[in-house]
Amino acid sequence: MKLLKILIFIFIPFLLFSCKEDIMKDIEDGSWNNERSIVSISFEHQVGTATIKRDKNNDGIVSFMFNESAGNKSSVKIKDIELSYGATADTHPGDILNFDNATNSAQITVTAESGQKRTWEITYIPFSDELIGTWKITTLSVYGGAWPEYGGAGYYNDIAERSWNWEYGGSGPVAEYDNTLTFTLEGITEAGDTYGKLINDAGADGKYANFIFIDDPDGARTPIDINYNYRKIPKGESTWKRNSQQGTITFTAADNSTATGRFVGSGQEVLDDYGNSMTVTDKAFTFEYQPTYIWIDIYKDRERLVENLKRFWIQVKKID
Image 1: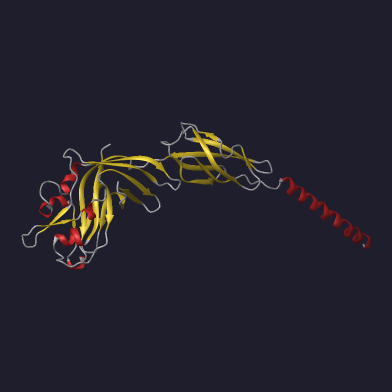
Image 2 (image 1 turned 45 degrees about the vertical axis):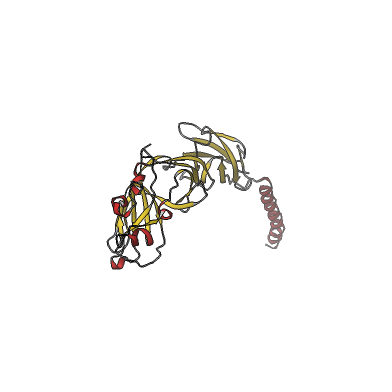
């Protein structure tokens, strides 16, 4: 028994040393490391961030949004690729990845230090912006009034119908109703913000609205220039940019003045707790205002359309 104990104590150090050698060998040659993942990847003309995941079969999948109008959809350059520790890939930054036109897909093979491989399916989704094209202005709608709890707020679906509030001569809101807005795309930022050129065409009448409100408390018909409230989309040529994170669109006129609003879809919206609601028929550009809380007469149009305007919608319909 004593001899057996002695042999065990002699054998154990040799066993531990042998195991340590094996472990160190695995670490040094990388045979322990089976990681073969794409950690991050980006491409030229990519919009936003690529989605990277593995499916239930442990196959690798990468998908990203691609601006086809700016690049060649068959041959897309890899801008950057990061792999898991010790892994290598059969493509590198600066390489061209060839995509199948039928499936919009390509493949990248990643090899772990251990030699194990994983094929990653790379798929792109063509980027599109519904804003691009030509839109016809159909209606100008307004919600205003600082005291809805007292009946002092109102929604006007079509401010052109209130012709007595506007300067005569067809130069009021109605002049906008044959205008067309043509949006062209000039580029997309890496964050997915689109930008381009806008042409606001005056239409057949050759006129843009001149928003001159007529205040007529005593028959004096006093004109008040409120273009600052309503000329949100510049006349003629301007530029536009959408902020994808904030959901806004900013128009910049030739004089560098700007207006920022939102582009919204069809649907009904409740405006307050006192019965006011509105409906967007197709699409609309909507702008918000901070009421002045100037009390003139809370039941008059001047209060709602001028002093305490809250929301303005330029309703549009796509024609091309």
